[in-house]
Length: 129
Length: 382
Image (cartoon, rainbow over all chains, first blue to last red; front, side, top):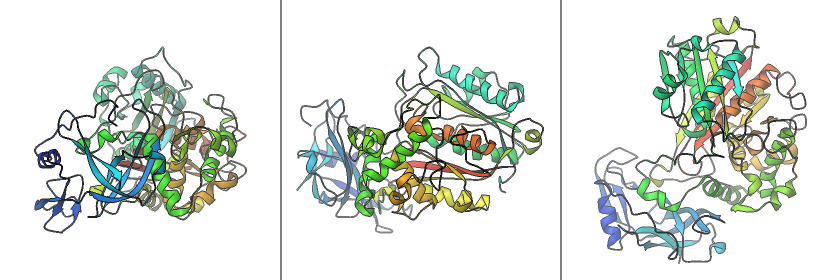
């Protein structure tokens, strides 16, 4: 993705700022509710399951497996692969798969987080392990 | 309270244009409104309720003023392509509650000749926008997982396009009128795996409008009587990423609500308009609505089962979004219009379903593989 148009910098708001601050340190955070114990992503102040406000930040290993993907053959920025990763901690999230042969992606494949720079906080992407 | 039997679709109009560089979007809304009123045999002065979605320039306030309406009820719910199926239910509710008596619903736009506005985003913005989810690639992720979980094949998906093309050959306004084969679909360029170009709908300018009214007013008009039996609506998203399953849609919730309100089952449906943004959209919706079991959609759509006069469930007999029309990249309106044509007996004779007394129109809006809405409408000929 390095030769491609610049990635959009996250706009960042008070609810999401700890996530982006951690991303700048190379850490990938998810949220966990201390009331129902469910992890979630993207992070909310209130748990989307039990609506408790007792949610806490937790560092994820940033590893998981491809739930599904699709290789977009053409775009202004060239081909790219979009899909979902299911993190080992549980939550699934939307991402792009990068730094690999996009034609070899498979459902179930192990992947890990990699951060890519923007003009603001870096953005998480995933690459095969 | 139920809407069953309390509201009639008295007027329908689909703009014949598929490319409108010389018209404004507001003008297209006005033209389809006029067309639907003329179809019903009513005038603009009769309209006292107005429904529009995100395609209407400036929303309900600007459109009511532009069209020169005076209304006592309005609703600008926007849930993408299924907005108009939602509006139909909401209009019926408003009519049943006495909030209005003649409701106008419009859709129009020109994505072919003018760039559509960007997709609205919510709290997920920073966590998703950079990954460039488009309809093609995110519906591709649904198809990919459906194939993985159930063994669905590209050949099976192709049958949906083949069926649509068989219908489109009889529609003089269809953008694509050529009958295609499974091989044609498989040989068309891969757009976003596993979806080929012919798995994707057309992009067209145009629009459509509906007039919904009370039983009393409808019975005083000269058009065949079509009334609402039931409507359901639902929203599904990743919801924090728990138990993600891209192989089903919000249709699993909107469908049962509509069927329960209508008091009928899938066996009673003689014709189905199913939003066909992509072939996979149709396959998943058929499963979600219960026309077949989850995972068996591929088998269900194969071998012409959706072709009128050939298969068990005639669908999208105007050629649908895959071949005929997809105004503003929002397919809900044209789905309702063709279902009403079928109930009136006004579909093309080559695709008219005999004794079509109960029909279903269903669609999704937003991005099927991310967050989306669905709405199901069941209608009957009186």
